[in-house]
Image 1 (cartoon, rainbow, N blue to C red):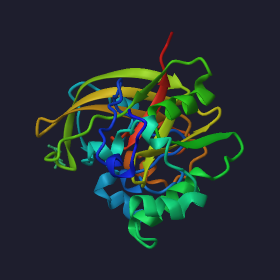
Image 2: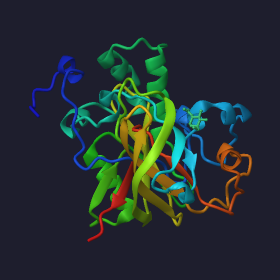
Image 3: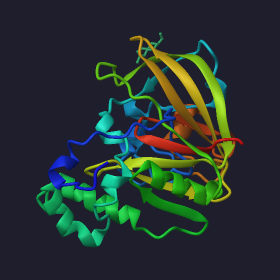
Image 4: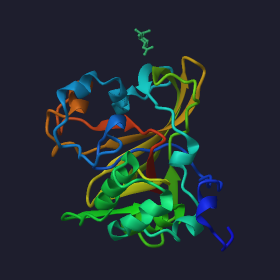
Length: 277
Ligand SMILES: *[C@@H]1O[C@H](CO)[C@@H](O)[C@H](O)[C@H]1NC(C)=O
């Protein structure tokens, strides 16, 4: 990337393709695709309407991973430019702080009361929140910053792979039946999930609760329309601290602490996993 970066070229520039991209989803945060832009935790109140929300069709159990099994899953279409990190050389040059909002609004030509400005302020506020006890959190704007973040959890010398579910085609229905063609456990234990936040370029909020076990699988799915999705299936192994009114428990018919709760990650979610040496 050149050094003479100018604002007008910013949006035109090519986005990076993450090399080892697969599929992914969340850690101690369990969210629905429709909650992508909120920061609610799994235990927080979920509207009873959520159970009727078709985009809630992302939950499953490990025992549902059976080759040949068919299930309805929601994979929303996303533009590659909205999910794939921009090169660090670009994002490093742009301030990322609530105190820089006036400058950022001018830079991106957003009016102060636009939807984009609101999203930007909310994302910056989320990114600047102090971690709670035992929590590691932060926002990342490039592959490199995500790998650095993951190393706080996985170890400073860890080799890190970033997983994401493949993007579906524009013509793929939001929800359809998918058949499991293949699946494989990728990692267990420390896995760092990061979720896309509203911002003019891809920004992901990552957070990790120390001592919480997760499991990640890659699941190859074929939709009824023929679409192949190389998906990330993320399991929260410890659900004992979650409230039983969470929509996932009702949809899966299990109780907190009784069973893991898993969900298919959208292309809007990333999981950083350690590569075994
Ligand atoms: C999935 O398949 C089942 C059984 O064939 C069917 O009842 C259901 O309507 C299908 N769901 C979708 C979203 O196509």
